[in-house]
Length: 245
Image 1: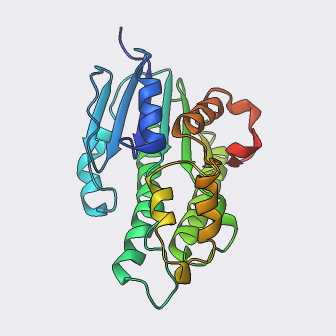
Image 2 (image 1 turned 180 degrees about the vertical axis):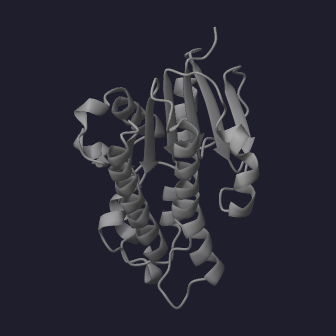
Image 3 (image 1 turned 135 degrees about the horizontal axis):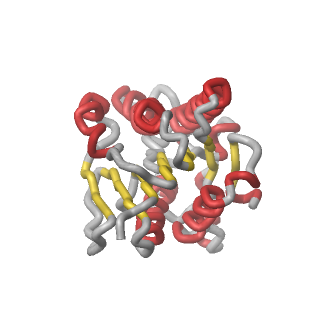
């Protein structure tokens, strides 16, 4: 069976991204391009892994043809899921490279990917096309120790809103969403819980979420993302939160 749906997923080897790949690979109609720093081995003919550090922006342009294959598809979906909490600490204690890297991964890489997605598929009006950028509730509130994470996700929200506005102006038909996934039991949460208390006063709260089993599983969150993708007409706003549906 020739795949009729194309899914491009970043951060595909762990957490939410891995759950999405596992879910989507069960349907032979789906062709899945997975981009991540580490390879996830999967015995599935419709899954194509690409090992790449999205923080290395200089090499992205050399890989566009792998990320965005040509073809006729009924549905073309990109999920910018890769994200990084970065160094959790206060200003004055941050490694300058950390400040650069967190914006590269959380903001600049998704912006470059969106730009190329539109360039490649903007004219493919016979296909349903959706871009979902995984954002965070932290994009809307200041959290001490999370300066880079909050700011990079806030910037991603605005990029997504502008992309949707431009899609309407151009009548391209592409839909854009920035989706906050809630608090999910992933490696990122482990990094957050290992932060220094003096650099992150919300540490006890996040330790409590884990201890009290209040974290969502990657699978639960992946199911919410797929519900959004499969029912876009139910979601009128660009900024969405899985805790609202």
